[in-house]
Length: 502
Image (cartoon, rainbow, N blue to C red; front, side):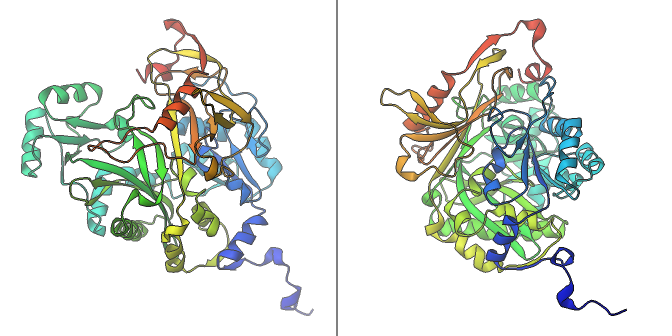
């Protein structure tokens, strides 16, 4: 029997070897591997289905009233009483309707999620689906603000002057702070948790007592920092086998009471060229690459997000925290001019988890992402319910393109599936609204109402050390909130998820 000649070997049995960005782009256009983004909404990766064939959003909230061609939602959703995003993701992965859907797509699927735990990995394996992320245990360890601080120090990425340690009361907190020369105006962080909920500003015994009443702060290791006059920034990166790719820098929109009930809580981002000066931009990109190189030693690969704090008084750049995952800014990273000139960073993440070989020049790609001409203006805000009342939503604004009116109100223009086609020329009048909570969903303090994306700035530059929401942003917020209608619930019917946020 004669051996088959190399030319007779089918392309189906040959492992792809992709050389350069154009080959990678073509590969994803022809992709046959089912890829599932499992999340409450499509928000983080909305629009990447433009780039990737066979890409599916597996969601809980029906943001598109069943009209998005790539969104799968189970018909039987049960009651929205989940305690975490992990619980909701696990509900979706374990749902029998999803099992049927995944079987129809064929074997070899990959799942991408924002938040995972051991149960997530088990449920995906039962479906024959690989989780295209680092192990949950590794992500959890790296998610600790204390571990982040230590890794940053080793990588030459400095944090705000701080000490790590445990305290018994306010007096021992002052003793610990004095040991680090931090003064008495302090920021105290727990190792894990949303920074808006587990970061406390302590400048007196009274403020310590208020914080200690919210969370257990004694007998656990804390990060205690000197309080600085700072501006928060964010950047995403992808740690590949060839090195770390760094995306665009953006300003965080945090703590505005019109958007979130949580002081210091993340509520959106602005992407624009002058978010930092040229020297600071270069330093931020280098620090991010250094941190990526350090994460490689931990066995990490793929997407990660870094929060930086810029000291407004000195211009120094400090590491805020590391999020070893896709994040809320992925939505902006993947839509900027740099993504269209190159590739969305998310595609490089996927390459690390697909059975392909590929070759890229990391330095060349980073140089293009750093080019000022690849930075255009994009902004987003997450609108949360900020009141204490709890109810069931009767009516809410639809997902799609909305326009502002001269009288300050909004008008619905048309339904749409993502914001990629928004143009900078209509920044003052046009925005994309993604509904999160719709009719039948609970409305409670901290619940996401929806997300507004604009080509106009939604937060002003610092003035007297403070950043304010722009008049355009306030118009959008008021117009959206005024369209949400809910029926109040009696105390006996309030769900546990609402009680937990009070």
